[in-house]
Length: 229
Image (cartoon, rainbow, N blue to C red; front, side, top):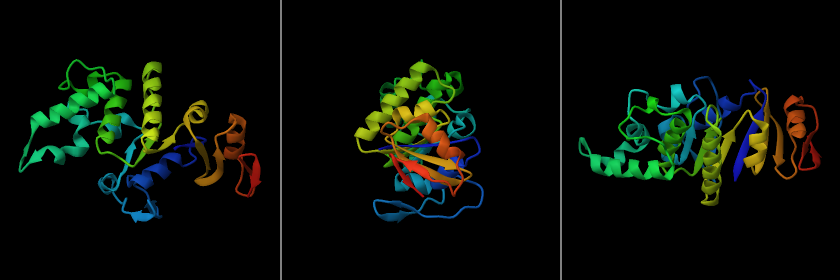
């Protein structure tokens, strides 16, 4: 499924998914389970090896390495797949890069161009390609369409749907309620770091989501047409 996470600014959505991925710098505690077993997500590398990947909210600071080319950014998380002793198999790496550029419809004249020369939408596609090369079981997308054009948004939505059909679970954080309601199968609403609503996205409205986001822990939350504390 595609699980959308909604909430007001400062609700704790990014903190939650960053902690799941092992990238939250503050104090936190909890357990992450996958396929009925606890997994180690204390660092991003451990999370990736366990099958949990994340595309961060701040693409420029956390998603790309601006000094590297487009292709080098794409293969960054799986470099060990192309390594032979102390060398990188450049031919095999370039083959994977070309496949990802074609799959993501990434517009670049050359994989060797600096990634900063691309538009915001194409940079985001490169970050997505980097994470997808790791073959994740669960993919976290934090504001995946922020700062991208309409065409790139549509392609990202199509990719999300295709991945869900293939069996990849997707967790998406978005500040745009229309986006959350448009692509999610289920919606969690966070408020002040707490779960305020859990909705099946069947006839769900923006008003219901906002009401849950503005509620207090003692309020009754409406879930799929039924009331639950």
